[in-house]
Every structure is written in C-alpha cells, then in structure tokens.
Length: 456
Image (spheres, helix red, strand yellow):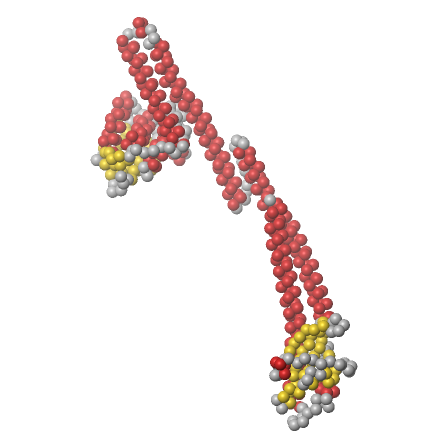
C-alpha cells in the first residue's frame, strides 16, 4: 500500500517536474533567441530605411559603395555580409574574403526578410538574418547579419542546469513529504485493519481510536458502532436464550408435575383433577404460543413471512380481540374499552390479529390494578389508525428507540422473550404501515398503529 501511494505521489511529482522543466527550457530559448532576432531585425530595418533615404537617386553600384555600406550598417556582436542580387558575397565586415553564394528564396527576392539558424563549417551554431536593399523598387542586394549562438546556448544550458537541480531538490523534498504523508494515511488505516481483524474473530471489546474528522474517522466510528450493535445483539441474544429457557422450563415443569400427579388419580378429588387438567391445558397453550413466536421469529430472520390477504372488517377483528382480553383485564380490575366504526380492510387478518393481541396484552400486563386501557379505531381517507392507550407504568425515554429490536425487553421483571413487538413491527411494515409509540414513565403509554388501505 505504501509503495503504491509513494508511486502515485512520485509519478505526479516527476510529471510536474518534467513538464515544468520542458516549459521553462522552451520559454528561455524562445525568450533569448527572440530577443536576438528582434534586435537584429530592428537594426536591419533601420539600415534599410537609412539606405533608401541616402543612396544616389539614379545610378548605384553596390560594389562601389560596399565598404561604406558595411561601415554604416554594421551591428556590434555580429558579422555583416553584403550580398548582391544573385546571392554572391560582395564584402564582409570581418575583412576576410568570403567565397560564398547564397541560394536566395523567392519571397526574399520579393522584398521579404529571412531568419535562419545554421551551423558553420566549424560546427558553430549561427543565427542569420537577411534584409533586402532596394533601388528604384528593385532588389539590388542583401544585408546578411550573422551572430554566434554559442554563448547564448551556454547561458541557457547554465540556467537549465540550475533549474534542473532546483527541481530535483524540490522533488526530493516532495518525496520526503510524500513518505510522511503516506505514513499519516497508512497508520490509521493499518490501525483500522488490525482492530477490524480482531472484530472479525469475535473480539468486539476492541475499539478503533481516532480523532480524525475525515472519511477514515467516519469509517472508524462506523466500525465502532457496528461492534457496539453486535455486542448489544449478543447480549440480547444471551438474555433471550436465558429468558426462553425459563419460559420453556416453567410450563414444562407444571405440565410434568401434574402429569405425574394424575398418574394416580385415586387420591385426588374431581376438583383437583379438573384443576390439574386446566393447568396442563393452559401451560400447553402457553408453550404453543411461545413456539409460534419462535417460528415467526425464524421466518422473520429468513425474510420468509408471507401475508395471506383478503377483505375483512377490521372493526370486528378488534372487537373480538378486546373481548378475548376482557376476562384477564377484569382479573386485574382493569377497565378495557373499545370504540370504532366499520372499516373494511384488505390484508392478512390472522397476522394483524397477532399484532393487536400482542400490543393489547402488553397494555394489560403493564397496567396496574384499577387501571384503564382504551382501544379505538379511526378511519381516514387513505388509512386507518388503531390507538391503544393505557395509564400503566409507562416506558422510560431511553428504552423507546429499542423496543422494536429483537430480544429487547424494557422490563426484565416480566416474563417474555422480547420478540413479540419485533414481529409486530415487521408485520405492520409488510402491510405498508408503521407503529408509533409515545410513553412517559409513571403516566402511561400510547401505541398508534397506522395501516394504509391497500388495493386488492
């Protein structure tokens, strides 16, 4: 990983250095060569203007006036050649005889100028500039300025080497910085990998320490949150196993005890036999209900809960459920009432019955003696709302966000496996609805089930 990051960094840095070096070298060549060319061009044009003004009006012999032309139009730092119209050298400012003939291009014969870079016989780099001379609108000769580029090239090379050294220093500093940056990136990543590897082995007590507000910090917080949730689910699962074991053991103990007792009924009265059979029946129902919850939980985990929908009267269903719980409510001296209008609904009647049985059961269970539980049905244009209110012990604010979670029990003193509400939430969600819970500890609880009307 570190090598890859360093490779990326250095590739970018080297690309920038190469581009900068190439642009700088091109710019400095263009600048110095351009200045030399512009200086010679201006001098040559000035020389031509001066020649146009002061040469004889009618007759002019280029060879006769060659020395005067060379002397007048010479430029310091250059060698001036005077060429005739055929491109033959008439005279040179160096004083040396030059056996040379230049092949004059057409545009130069027509009055244009020419800049060229050539190499001398000795291999010296030379810039040449040709300026035509006119007499009576005819080209009679050319001024050829020659200047050596050797010193300029040396100076440009010196500047190039200096900038190259500076770029290498910058690249080295950038490499060191990249190394440190890669370490700053990789250390938290390696820490995250190390802790997450431990989490993968089930060591969820480990946490990732991070103070970074960036994406890595967000990732660390997410992994820590995941570990917290897994630990919480593990705790709830263990509590569920303990609770379900107790829930199974209690009715089985009662059933087994009375089954053993009823083996020898001769010593029992008819009332005792009836009482024992009643206990066996009720405890068996309790076991069946618990097993059904476990089966629903299994289907819920596997996303295999299916709805068998048909049209039914939700009002009648709620009246039946309230009547079912009235006897239990009366035993605790609880007032259980219902009010509602006819509401024809399309859904899974048995599953919704399971939902309301569970919610009303909880309301009766957690409401004290001489308390009150109210169930009401309200029909709207696009949905129905079923409200179950009680004035029982209520739920503390810290528990409300978690009551829909599997295995969660807000009050461990009461029996239960903690899966009934989780199943209820999912059944309502499968109908496209939702459950809202408002509660205040010591005041009571209000559960609102909202179910939208579905098309058959």
